[in-house]
Image 1: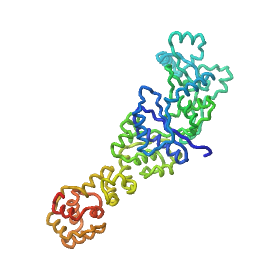
Image 2 (image 1 turned 90 degrees about the vertical axis):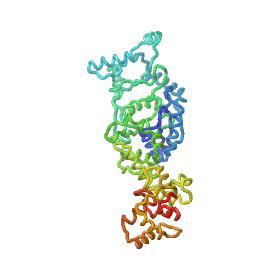
Image 3 (image 1 turned 30 degrees about the vertical axis):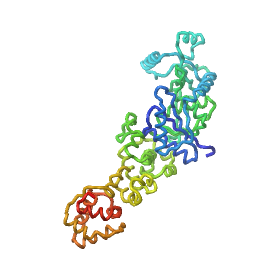
Image 4 (image 1 turned 180 degrees about the vertical axis):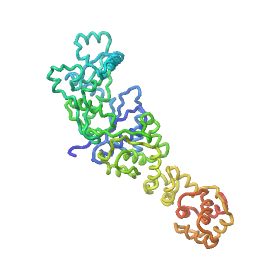
Length: 463
């Protein structure tokens, strides 16, 4: 690319990050990192009543846990002077105009239009107000909200005006996911950009931020497609070139139902508390709804290397928490010791690598290693199925040191001494040594147990 790729993730610090947010953040991050570009964190904290520093910190913590580092961070609450300055430019150009209708009045207008079979669009009545009209309304205590005049030949435009002929009704762009897209501006109401209380709406502030931070690509959900048509016109009204856009499909549940009402229960914090691995969450969030197989990846670098907007489907992406559980288990089964060494050091000690290679194929959460540590190195109550047989097995127990060949040597000796084979040979030994019906390969676990511990368990002792 001829210029640095710059993308942004823009959560509101009014709640915790959920799987929908994760997918947005991750797709932006992967695209930027593959291109050698920048990933910015923008906190959309202009909602003064709901935004909190606690949620802002939680967002940072969640992104850090996922491994999604950011190159810079900024807050919309620190940029109100810039928004005011930009709004003044649009007012001066006639693209931002004051409106005085109350919510009740607007609602009645919409109902009348619908009763006549018309779309409930704003009729631009405010454009026909004279200075005297506006002065009178303000003297009555009305404060204006400000609408952006879309470039179209919609309600309130003079059809005889040359301006109406040259104003386009279609806003077109080439979407990186959806292909050729357009929005008919003539079918939209002029959007409110500034509320009566002087606060700014996302549609406006996002454009100002994207211009000032030189955002090259806006990557977001398909529910923003109509917003894009409006925002492209705001970019152009401010003399800026719009960024490229990529609108990906939204998540639905395994049965096709919308996830919007359930996202709160699918938070990053919840995943972390449930003992899931960050790369399990990243793997599913990045690969769901793509042409790639949904399978665990060991690193973000691996995900970034294969990222391509062309792989994203336009169909809704199905999210199933049971699939996340399965990916988490498969990820642990393939995780090399080096990636968990620090987490195992205090738990296991000198034999940590041997322990990990023995048990990783039998855990679904990393916390499961505690149970297997107890089985191998701690105290258990042996299950004695056949005491005389176990006594015979103890009599031929090899001397130390032990290796992964010791189990075969020992069971061969037991077979020769007792004539047993198959399940009758192996199952009583597993029950006595682990108190479990199944688990890791005994040849891998046995060398981790001392000879004294094994002998005691064969006698049924809690050693």
